Image (cartoon, rainbow, N blue to C red):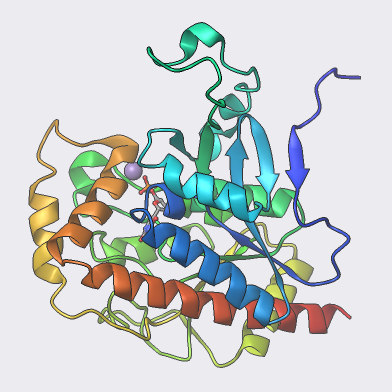
Length: 323
Ligand code: PSU
Ligand code: MN
């Protein structure tokens, strides 16, 4: 037998009879500034609880997979992004991130740190891809977030396609989002999802939404009429043995007009050899937030809260079918 076991801790425990809803941690550490990120994360957990489900924010803390965070841990994660203590971790980096179980040696502390300073946690902030994977691993079927990654607009040159899309193609988690941001090529994103065999549908609308806008001009492959409609599809996909996930897009109830200029400006700043790899999305998100004043943040918070409501209703409907 191996000496190694997966370092994993659960809070709340699996004994809870309520449906669990997974939440990601990159949106907290890299998706929004402090303290809006903490406010959003706390509000989303509260909404999920009020509807009779149990939230589980997923992250890696000091090399341990955490399925659910305490309020103090959520606050620390929210501060960790700006303090440089959080690394964005997608599925391919999860295993390596778990190597960091050793407490840092005293000589690793920044110069001038008093000996009595408590050691600060290091966080692996999980993206949609790695959160989906860990949710599935721990038996959680529904995952609520804001926006997923997608195919980038400079894709023909950069080949930049988010690992979120490949994970959706191979992991049977239901991801509740507000669609795909217009920083991305939404048409190519939908094509990639189709090729990957991902079930994609919009909640009570015929159009696939574009995060800040409830419309994108693109038809949604499926229109889901109700939480029960989504739940039946989730259960049917499972009975069929499909390996892939379901992407449920909920139109933003608090749309933000005129975001296109900010997006164009942010994209123009990317430039060749400038921001690349996993830094691209956090850079674009922060820049669009800056260029729209606080407005994009307000819209972002409202849509995540809406996704939490729909996600909880879907999880309850799935539970109802499984009774
Ligand atoms: N889109 C958002 N907010 C976010 C993200 C995307 O509107 O916080 C984050 C999510 O964690 C998503 C990740 O999984 O960015 C995608 O990054 P990349 O494009 O590098 O795959
Ligand atoms: Mn990328």
